Length: 411
Ligand SMILES: Cc1ncc(COP(=O)(O)O)c(C=O)c1O
Image (cartoon, protein in one colour):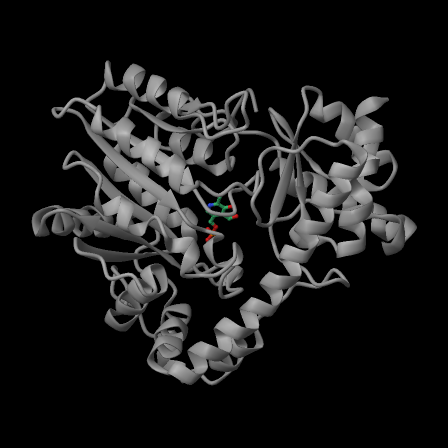
């Protein structure tokens, strides 16, 4: 948008429409025109069943339906109701017992959790750092608050996590600023499906150890998809590593209930801090509460009560985990089908573990996605490639898509 009528531009670049929702709208329009069976809509980051309907955990819905009016009507404290804040710790850490000082502040989804971190740990004019395959709102959040961003190359030529690029960018940015927010989205990374490995974490730790002691790193691990990656404890293997990072690194986690509890629209999550001292944890809570008060004030109470109830009742908790596991297994089967078909037709994907998305490197993604749209296949073109949401299409479509994408790229 080049010109504002009344609104203030504030240096922001505001597009006419959200790209993903725009493409999704075109897919919907084509479905209305030509029928559901003529269209593949692999655009959105929500888990759909094989008929294309949103999957909602019935165990979570049951708790929701049985809430007392007071449980959702009342204001929640700004940092979240105490039982929720305890439940988030369990949900975030599972069997791991952190040694550091843990603090939790509620947020409206992972998005709010990320926003509170960028609001409080980066100064205006400073840049934050994330991978070049990234979730677009990282950029929007930074720009909205007058902060810049820089990306590091996620993968090197050997298709491995690019520790050298991470270090190069950290060094560059810390030459001109005293602290740096680094966002790492793992596991089931959006948009690639990558999971940072033990080896990668060892490399990241070495990089952080080389950061001058008078500079600070705020590491934000975005775990929006963690419970859709695989075994929930195994995929939390990196938690102890986070606690071994040097003194000048503060570890924060953006925790979200959107996917794990199919509470996307309820807007619930939290920022979790694992600090080396009580003072740092207290400061975290204080600044996050201050920012919350000036934006969403307190958060939606209903999902906080829902999570509290799930963690207060072992049987219910087991039911939720089991129900989620069934859907996760379905998602993993889709991923395997896509991977096998890609290997068969020679379609190269970005390194992938599992998750809602697979990405394909492509220098003319807009053009290729345009061609696919004509065939009724709706995908998301990104700066570095094409994102396919395997979360929103059935297994047989996952098996069919790679060859179609390859053909459109080869045209
Ligand atoms: C990478 C990533 N981080 C965080 C989120 C946060 O989502 P929400 O604010 O809905 O919890 C999402 C959701 O799509 C995401 O893809």
